[in-house]
Image 1 (tube, helix red, strand yellow):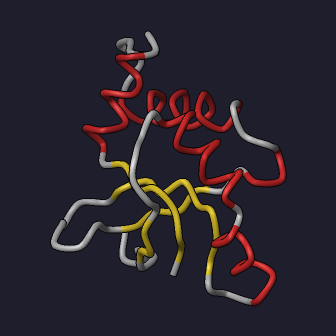
Image 2 (cartoon, rainbow, N blue to C red):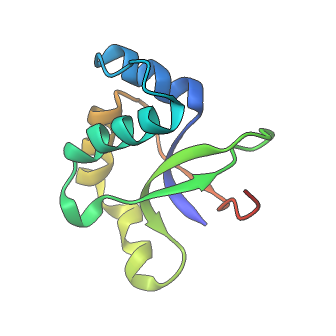
Image 3 (cartoon, one colour):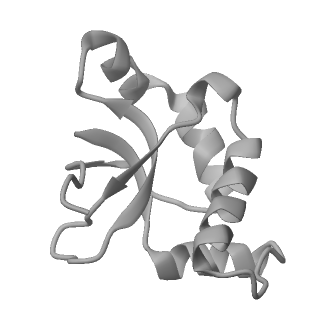
Length: 106
């Protein structure tokens, strides 16, 4: 599992629109442009994304990862309040991050 903020395709598109990143280059390219833009605002050692499904949603979401339950080192991120705040600011989100199950069937 991963702990972070998961954004649907629509939420990523809205982020891209707010930041003037939308163009006609195709959805896959747009995905990379938006993820790169978000990650540019984060410390290089903390740039991780995962593909997840929000509870009750069939479609994949992109999770900007704060922590994972893989091992004790990865779990330490749960208490990294500074990184949570930084990610909230970059993504323009409020509220706490959540745990998500990794999507493995795509």
